[in-house]
Length: 268
Image (cartoon, rainbow, N blue to C red; front, side, top):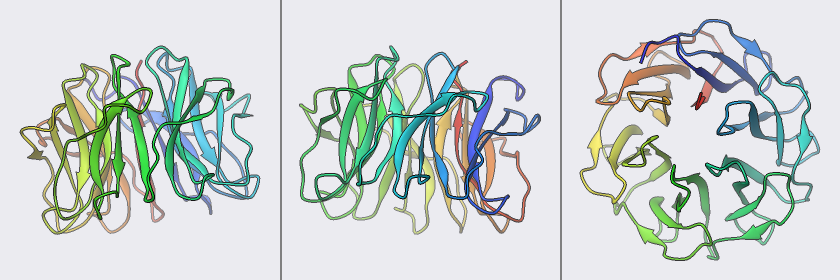
């Protein structure tokens, strides 16, 4: 995939607090989308690439919002005294999953794309978070601490048929489906520091893609499935990188004294 195909949204505190930015996939045409005195982040592209769901603390706690991909028409979808974060869209654009602590601890929820019909999908005494919808719309990957540390699971879109995919004594977190649904990239601490891994969607053939003494975090796939973007502090602070899906050809896209992190590649 040429580096100038598609766009990458990310969050950065380069202007004093975390705001949402977008750039071309080669790092050019950087544009700031949100302007607040509090943090905005945790964004997700709609399947048509025309909107971004995101989380914001502008009302005192984290809630889910949606806006056009140019930053206009920012509309709240949740409005609760709890924290709601990390939205992701269903492939048909009808639903958005997210996690919320509204019932005492963080669980996975789903709602219609207009914010109506909010329903709880998981029910545990510990944290379930970071949902990611499969490209065929039949499964949701997520991370859970139900076994003491973060591991990756999948479930049906109604919360049924929960299946554990990773089983390590340290954290596996932040699952991201490949566009063809065959693979899941994720972040793991299994080798002593956080690195990017990929596995088959069944959990088999877990493979390490990055190898550093510092944190590599939060993978996101290009629309054709040939590249991954992620953030890393390998150069002293958190910056955005891209690489081929086998871990080769790593290229740094941002350069700041502040932190640029949690990149998400547009689907179009």
